Length: 132
Image (tube, rainbow, N blue to C red; front, side, top):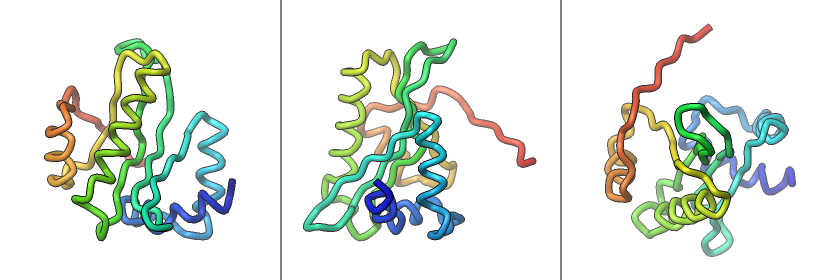
């Protein structure tokens, strides 16, 4: 629903500052047509955590739940919201019969990396990109 997608923008923008509010809903909808799903967690009527993810089959890992985006609002961190979202995503992957759960995280996100390590995720590869 476009209004729910739009409500996620302020939190998602904290992770993806290059996003433009006026384009956010249409970009998410385009990705949804490619299998992307957007989930959010509310507390006291405010969105506090957002995840964008997709299920995909890969030669190297089989069926996986890949997390494109995972962010908890800065003012809502260390309150268990990120842990709740991560736990839900992993449970969803297991229910869907995935053999792996994976995500990429920017090299500058040290606090996020510590969070992932605490929850059993490990670095398995490097992600390379070439802007075109």
